[in-house]
Every structure is written in C-alpha cells, then in structure tokens.
Image (cartoon, rainbow, N blue to C red; front, top):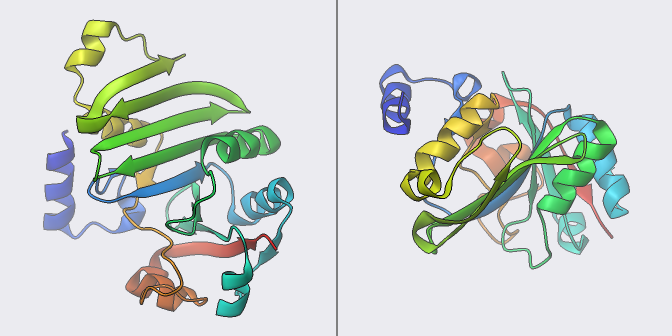
Length: 215
C-alpha cells in the first residue's frame, strides 16, 4: 500500500495515532531521534550522555536557561520513544545521540531529519550501537549516499527509487511513526512547559513524557 493510500485511509477511517505507522508529512523541517525503549530509560541515558538532568515538568525559565533542552515522549500504542531537541537549536543533534542511546540501551535507535526547504532528508538506523542503514539525499530528494546491512541496492536501483515511498515503508517496517510534530522555540504559541500547552489535543495520545535539560 502506497503512502498516499495510507494517508487517505487514515483520513477516511479517522485512524488514531496509536494505529498509524509510516510518515505523516515531509512538508516541514525537523530533526528527531527514535529509540526502541521506554521514556524513563531514554531520558536517563540521554541525561548521562549530555551531562544534564531529567525534569518531568520544568518551568519556562528552566527551559529557557537550558543550553540544549530535549523533549522525550512516547505515543500510545507505540514501542518507540521520541527525542526532540528544541526546534531551531544551533547545536548538532542526531546520529551521535542515536548511536549513544542505541549502544547504552542495547536496542534500536534511529536519527531522522527532513527539510521541505531543500526537499532533502537523511536517516541512520543503529542496533546496539552498530550502524545498520544510512541514507542521505541532496535537494529534490536525490540520493547522495546509501549504505545498508539489510538492503542490497545497486546504483540503478537508487536512481529509480522513490525516496518518500521508501522512507514511509522503512518506518512501517520498523513499526514506527514519523508524527509530523516538533518542539518549537519558547516564544512560539504552541510551546510551553506543560504538555497540554505544547501538544494541545495530542496530549491524549501520549504514553509518557519528560524533559532533559543541560545547564
């Protein structure tokens, strides 16, 4: 089933996030890490890796003071926890965190980034700290690099690949969802210390959440 078919079915059937797998949207800019582990374990390891601390419900002052605040949460019905660094942060974020979390927790972790400005994306999947698959694209979703232990694709295969369909199926195969949401700057209306303010109606879809702050 194609991504377009999935999106249409989800809309027609009012499918809850708990049952969605794949990619909701490529039409935004974001970076995230997904970890196949619980929120508490992910947050604790991330705090150790970054030299920070876990805070369940920080004030806006604490969030603003943190150099690299991260939101860690999981959606109901899903086995992956998400790590979002505050949107538009200038610090590097992604593969190193995914690899560190994967190695420490002895599980799978995925770093994923997308840009609708450049029409580009990239991902790296780790298992127990080992790189399993990696893809990077240039503008127009043209594949610039690809390496995999599980998929043997030739140059011709890559040239003919529909990247968005591939990534959508990749998330489905991992039993994961790219939820099309991001951790916005504090001045944005939809971001605050409380999850109800940060996620609105989506707060009912959460199965645990916390913050990791670095002083």
